[in-house]
Image 1 (cartoon, rainbow, N blue to C red):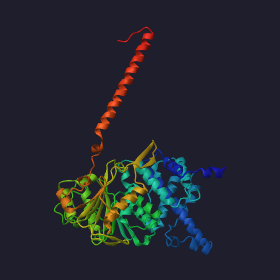
Image 2 (image 1 turned 90 degrees about the horizontal axis):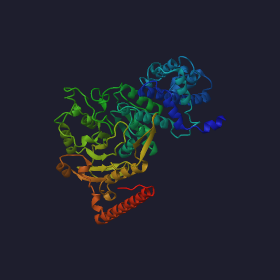
Image 3 (image 1 turned 45 degrees about the horizontal axis):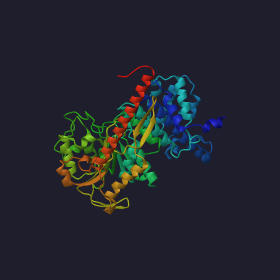
Image 4 (image 1 turned 180 degrees about the horizontal axis):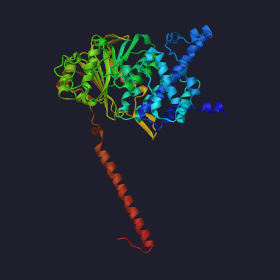
Length: 530
């Protein structure tokens, strides 16, 4: 009977049960951190046991080796003290003080693994106020997540992606800022191709850009050792979430000494002008990113006649990223609200100089309703410090100086991604693999030294040279440049009018017949109409 039950297990149902175990207890944010941190402990334990078994086979049951953290850390495995091991928490699941035992376990893991300092939540389970039966239910469900029940190639990644997406979908606008839709991140990675060098995200959220960079490398048979991950995050809980997300996947990282604002406390000033790839999804239209008189002499904003306005950080993010890029080969792919394409005032002056400096390579407007935090259409910007062409990842690129590729994907909304919520489901537009491949093909064909593979396509893409952009007052809105076809002109009006007239005649005929039948029916019962 047990085997039959096990076969019926669905990973989605188990993950759903994890989410609802704490339903009605704490805030979405607290419940998210509780579930994800407990899953972290479970996955850390699975790796710990594998390593422990290796040591047992090699050294026997010798505590000098079996209980020595260094023998685990050397294989990128976290050492877990007795009280923080998953089997111990499962055994103690019915204890009255199970919440405290979990919090103590988190603290012990941090104390014994230097790289995890500041990563796991402190006192979270005690502060939740959850009943012990609810915590036990959560432990029981998390305990089902293992490679025996679910034969997933990347079980850890699958589970973490599910929770990050689910909690972003069910949270508020602010709660959702820690997550960028996976298909959008995949698109950015495919276009930038971060095979080697430094990958930086100045507002890294839960680390999706970094995870996808590594997935890109893995899928193209590259080496993770050739890439350095550097990031920064302002929100404490999200900073810790990112560290957990990366650590449990075995990804090395540098997220700075602490959580902090990228603008007022840049944790990576030593990387100015040294970054190869930037992948980012900054908070859209962020207000109050600096005080009115702050950062006025900051070198990131020097060389521009005006400062980015306090009321909107869009161009502050752009200038910050430009200051980090390697001047010889740095490239950035990031998302901004569409308003930045035509923004006026001081933002116009900054945009004009960025275009004149020839930093913009491509502008790609995405479909509406892709993001959990907003339903507006968003733009993917690609900046490149060197558009002169040459050899790149084994391909010859042409000189694209003073030229920008514009793409408009707003009609690409046929594919959706669905996530179950406590009340109903939420659907969001998402790119599938074929769509991502087509976008990449257009971009690569445009950049290729063999220009025969690219052509402008009405209502989709167009390559535009500097004089035309200057004539359009430095607007970066694709609608200014991409040809629009008036499909009304394709209509055969004479044929359409005849069809409509015939339909109206048929409707009138049916009405007359219905009226006649009604009159006869009333006469039959002794009543007349009219």
